[in-house]
Image 1 (cartoon, rainbow, N blue to C red):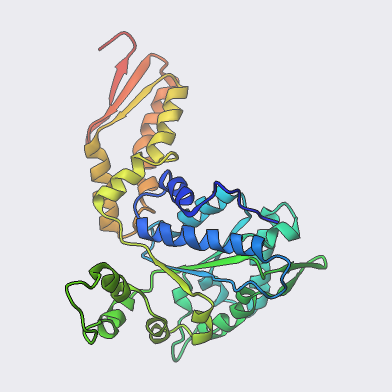
Image 2: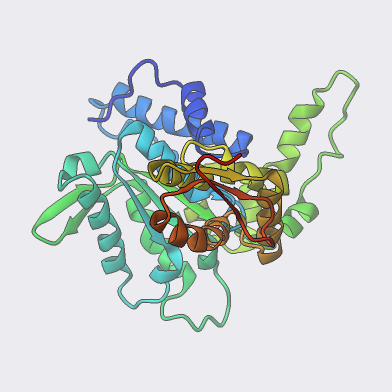
Length: 337
């Protein structure tokens, strides 16, 4: 049984996430409360059969905005098994149920083979928006069919795995994510509270939050079936990353790419200095690629590769400075300024 210690509160979860995930404050709060509530309900109602009304989560945001990272970090903090799946692959096979079984098998593997512990884990299904119901689909399995196949496990049921193992999905928290391109246009047509009589005393923040909230009818119109949407009552939106956020992602988090390389160079007895302008240049390229934070690591790794090729063979080097992405790095020998 996964029991949350008393010190694990929604605010404590957010503080932990802040060490690894840049920005997305509202999404982190929503997800923290959802996860806290999920495991607290399991603890409080464990002896009452059928008493737990599970609230799975839908994360909406462009690729590279931090959806997967946030879920991984959450699972790591809570020490629960965590597995991921790609909804697109589910729609590209004739054997959807086998793919679902494989997804749950990965969760059992992450739990060290402990089926009971796996039954308290978290499953993140990405690109769920690719399952929207559309006419004339050429995929092996229609998106709507996959949605129907996922309904049962998301609600909770025993699933047979190879080796006569059964995993009960009742207490597994399912988090689905997707970019949902085009949803904004639907919301712009359907949202608005102009019909509500407002006064100066009205809380404008509440009205704005209601107006920005993704409604079930928006998801229906997008292409998710009502039954599937009903299994995802909690919705959190991840905002597109700004240049400033991308710069922070590379340098601020405890496991940031810069900190990782800084430790590698430190192990070689070399100090690594990267000018702020370099992070800005990399961020500008990432924005041009339109891949969010996903391309940051690749660009930074490419920058570091020729330097790391040189440094280990030259123990006289004590410091490396990088002032621009488009200039050669500067190497300083020991005993020189």
